[in-house]
Image 1 (cartoon, rainbow, N blue to C red):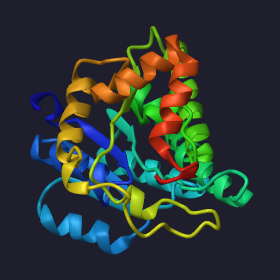
Image 2: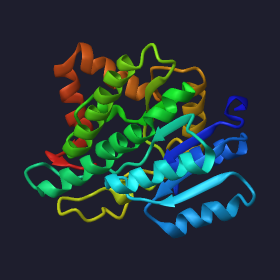
Image 3: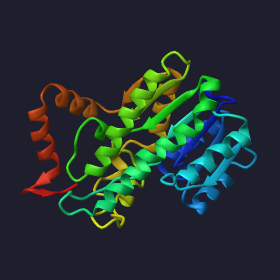
Image 4: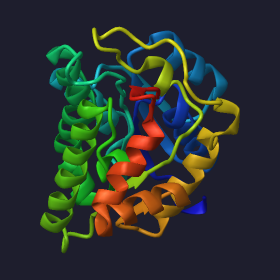
Length: 268
């Protein structure tokens, strides 16, 4: 990733999973990295792995505007500007709407959409000045409604609409705005998924060992950034789902139902 050398890369949610892999690959490629997370201990462990590297960490909850403002402003002050902003921080949910508390939907939206909004807005002037890149880490859920994930779907649909509009606004500015859609990736997102009452699920319904690694995901993401892509769908399965949703929506509804339900009960 030679293109990352001396670039300032700002990553939300960099203490674990995809975010941590993005931070590590950037650091190992000669970039200057600023990242945030809610867990100080995990951020500190990341910092201890890279002594002497240009790494700036900040404890921040992206659902809070003031935290995002502090994080972005501290990154600009620390490194002098921002070349690449990767809005990676996110959370999922596992609950049917009829069972879920409204606050669960609000929390998912606050983290996944508002967190991206705040960080992008506060970083925007610096990125425009440097003709940089803004990235949203989205999902097939930004294209296709998935049962038990209404809030997650809403946040990813909103993210992609927001970034598409911003891309057009900045079309002649030299800034690239893009979104990437990893498939199922080995990470903590399923363990942390919110249940109907807002508590964490605490376990994964998938065989994490068979999923795409966070490191693979990070590599694909940076290759897309280097090529200044508009959007990238990582897996064949997700590409197929999006194709069917666009051209055969009724069939896609039935296939999605079959995938997520067993004996009329949501299983994933």
